[in-house]
Length: 104
Image (tube, rainbow, N blue to C red; front, side):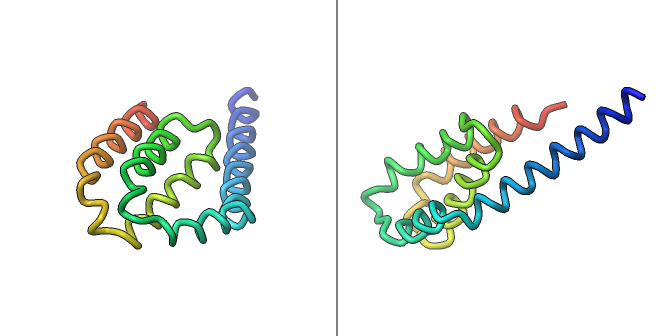
């Protein structure tokens, strides 16, 4: 009985997380942030990249982390060459993040 209750609560939590993530993708705030990302230049990257990685690492809530990850993807697609100096740092931090988050 307990496993059935736990299973249905886990499914409910998963559905809620899916809804939160999809809502954050189309929120007015994310639309504005994506429009502002077009204005990001090489000068801002040294400040922006570590902050985004920090949000992905320490952010509270799944939608916060997913939104930060979306911004990283957006940055990579728009400024791949400019992000090369940050690639090692980003890669290393992401490995640590995912290792800590998804370890059994």
